[in-house]
Amino acid sequence: MPASSDKNLPVMIADTSDAVDEQHFGMMGNEPRTCLGDAGMDKDVEDMFPRDPSKQRKLSQGQDYTEVGAYDNVAYYMPALSSTYVDALEGLVLPSRFGFTAEDLQFTNPSSKLCFYPWVLYSGGQAAKTPKLAKRRNWLTNGQHDDRVTLIGDSGGFQIQQGTIAFQGMPTVERMLRWLEDVATHSMVMDFPLATIASGGVDIHVQRLMREGVEMEKLSKTLGFDTGFLACLFQTVRNNRYYRMHRKVGATKVLNIIQGRNERESKFWFDRMLQFHFDGWTFAGKHHSQLAMTCRRLIEMRDLGHLRQGQWLHFLGVSTLRVGVGLSMLQRALRSYTDAKDIQLSFDSGSPVDVMRNGYEAVTGVDMDPEVWSFRSARTRQDAHDGDHRPLNEIREKGERSFDFKRTQTALGVHLTLDDFVNKPWVGLTGEQTRKLQQVLLIHHNTHAFFEGFRRAYRTLDDRNILERPKELMCLPALLDGVFTSETPMQFIQDAERELNALALAKV
Image (tube, rainbow, N blue to C red; front, side):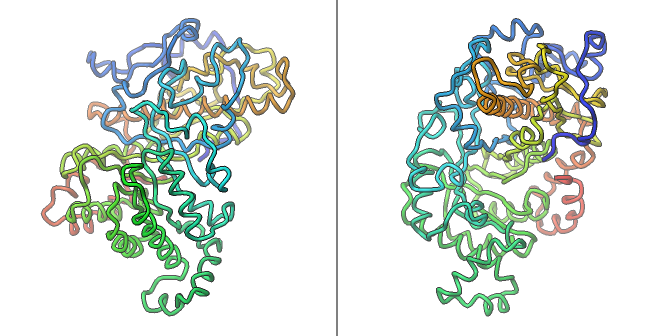
């Protein structure tokens, strides 16, 4: 997901003459976000950092996001951490002038000077690609976490279809299951996703099943689904059976999965997953954007007793501000109208890493214009920054200065300067070592900026901020109330399908 809507815009660095305009386009220090005179509301949306950068650098501990009011009863963003980032922190030594260490770059470290964010996702598709890699442990996979940490483990099905993991049948499923049980609080089943059907990524598995005697073409004609869809479904069922038979109960909470590119596929897939009584569900495919399809599955889960206390629902591979707020609205409806009074929703993406890869860009803030609602970023690697020792937080792109643009200040953005990201070796380091460090630091900054961006978007869940919502989200709470209170919910969904899909989580 690109963080900036226009990559051709040149970057402009703030100057002191702009300070008087700060209140009109950004956020400063502990300045309240509302004019309502509501102390509780102001506390929920206030900045996380002191106004004075020198005081920020002296903080002994970073922001604890479990104590942030805006994160109460919302869908959690789970950054999909890359193995490049996770592995790089092992034994990493940073220049002493930074005032923080590699341990402070660990998001799940409650003692970090930068921030403590306990909701993350890590994929076995990266960390357990081979039997040798699956045995390695590091700060994220050693299982020694604060009790507040939720680590969702992905099983690597997507990497199998990409060809970066060799699928050897149940030995591969066994390896992933044991890795997940060792490292994750919640784990996805090893599904075979539908995303690579069109590109031919599933063809090898269709052919494998045919060699095993499965009459794929005949079943395709009989059932009315393409062979790629059926191959993904059949292999996922096989893998689920292995999980059910061989899992260590209590080692990790297993999340079943629903795939589907349309309502018919979703329903057919879901009906065949009901035989597996796991600990929660993951929604993949088009479920994050076709909300009517998702609501149908949720009503069926409710009526079949599959929405219970302590359950977790995860939505794969999406992290727009609209989706974060929309799923939070869905979570609140589920808590209000079903037996799952403490159900938790979450969603993930690797967008902060993607932003860094897009020309060493740093997330600068969020454009909260209801017609936009997106993250913005600016390129850091510029010769013009050579010798510029202003904080990274002061970089911004030209065109961002609107009333609705809100800067996402990060703790790391106070410690680092614009000069730190110029394309030149740091003292005592080679050019390659410097580039790797710059990448790691930008990933942390961008990820923290996403936490802050969602914090700012979550404040619109308060009805007093309803006019700040995009039109897609204006009517969503009322529609969801209708879905879960209707005596004929399926008919309600059918009647409101266009509105649910067009006005809910559009523009994903």
